[in-house]
Length: 339
Image (cartoon, helix red, strand yellow):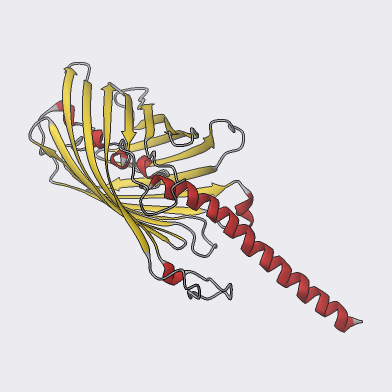
C-alpha cells in the first residue's frame, strides 16, 4: 500500500511539473507574439532611470554633458528562456541648439533574437528664455534584425534542442528599416512629449502573410518636476507614459512617481511605477518600485517589477539595472539644452 502511495505521489509530482512547463510556454508565447509583431525595443521602465532618450529622439542633446547609459533587463526570473534585453545609449549636444544620439540593443526571447540600432537628431527652440519654455523636434533612423534560431528548436519534445523536422533547414531572419519622430514641450517644471515610432509599414515576404504589417506605436510622456521652494533639496516628479499600438488598437499606461533628494550636484531618488492595460485599470500588468543615485559623473539605478498575473507562481519578477556616466560637463551655454 505504501509502495502504491509513493508511485501515486511520484505521478502527481511529474504531472505538476508538466503543467508548470506548459503554462509557462503558453504565457511566454503570448508575450512573444506581442513583442515579435512590433520588431522594436521592448519598453519597460528604462526611461525612468533618467534615460528618456530610449523612448523619444527629442531628448538627444538635452544636457550640458555627454550622457551614456547602459541598461540590463531580465524578465520573469526563474523561467527558462524568458525575455532578456540589453541596451547602450548615448547622446550629446551638437552646436548650441541641436543634439545627436545613438542606441544599440540586443533582445532574446525564447528562440527569437532581436538586434537593433537607432541614430537620432534633435533641434531645440527657445520660446521664452525667462520662463524656461522650450520646444524640441526629433527624428530617428532605426534598423532592426529579427531572427528565429531553428537550431534551438525542440522538435521531438524530449527537452533538448535539436531539429528532427526535414522542413526546418536553417534559421529565418528579416531586417526592418524604419523611422521615429517626436516633439517635446518644456515649460518650467512641466514636460510633455508626443512620439510616433516605426512610422513605416514592414514587408511580409518572410513570415506568415497574416502577420500584422503595421508597426506604428504612439507614445505620450508627460509629467511635472515640482519643488516646494527653490532652496528645497526635495523634488517630486509625477508622470504618465501612455502607449498606443496601431496594429491591434491595444494600449497601456504607466503611472509613475519619483522623488529626488539633491546634495549639491549629486542626487538620490526613489519611485514607483504602476502599469496597466487601459481597459483593466484595477488589474495591473506589473508594479515596479525603483531607486537610483548620481554621484559625481557616475549613475546607478535599480528597478524591480512585481508580476501580478498567473506567471507570478513560477517567477520571482523582473529585474533591471542601469549604469551610466556623464562626462564633459558644461559644454553648452544655451538654456534650451539644460535638463
